[in-house]
Image (cartoon, rainbow, N blue to C red; front, side):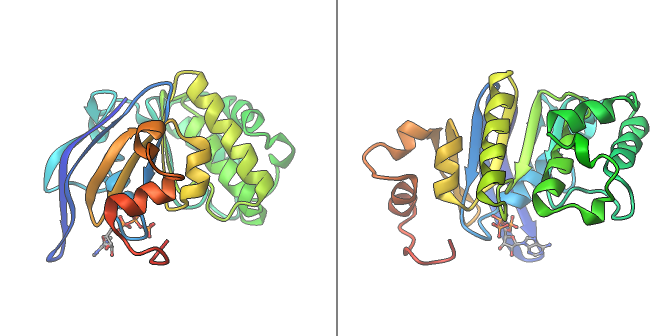
Length: 237
Ligand SMILES: Nc1ncnc2c1ncn2[C@@H]1O[C@H](COP(=O)(O)OP(=O)(O)OP(=O)(O)O)[C@@H](O)[C@H]1O
């Protein structure tokens, strides 16, 4: 469960988040949707304890990230890239993250298997394709078998086969009872994957609900977004 409650954030003199509130629930894929610069990454960084809000709270399973005793066992995150040093092999990276977080090193091969990367276990991270690198990032997020997954733009830049694999992976994760929160500015892609939608624009939540509720009365999620925000089509999407 993810609970964001009235989070506001200022960078320099500019307010970038205004009373952002929403929930992401177990067993569902929640899509955090908004154009470039809307505030998605800033919100996720606060949720993951990488930044602090001026006010409000962001909780994972009822606690702020920084108060989680063993964070990897509660929440797995995929932000930029795989997080691995380029010269390290996929397996060595995973073993290092596992052992430095008090998890068994044997978990490395288990998560490589889960993300279909066993064959690339001995490849150096710097030599992985974008799709493989994304899978390595996911494998890292899964090391602690967390109940919550947070993914920033997980399908960005992936080819159709990679997108298809990611969709299946996220669906399976939710079906296993995980809370899955993913951000995207790709509305068409998101509409194919998510159960619930949270729309953010210019630092404010515009709407939040099931995909069916948010798109009711509109042809597509994209139509719903432009109707809700009155943003000109052809803008920054
Ligand atoms: N360190 C910073 N200093 C100043 N402004 C920042 C900083 N980080 C983000 N911003 C601003 O905050 C706003 C929200 O940015 P954020 O990266 O959260 O948006 P986003 O929805 O994730 O966009 P994108 O889809 O482009 O990644 C933007 O206007 C951005 O320019």
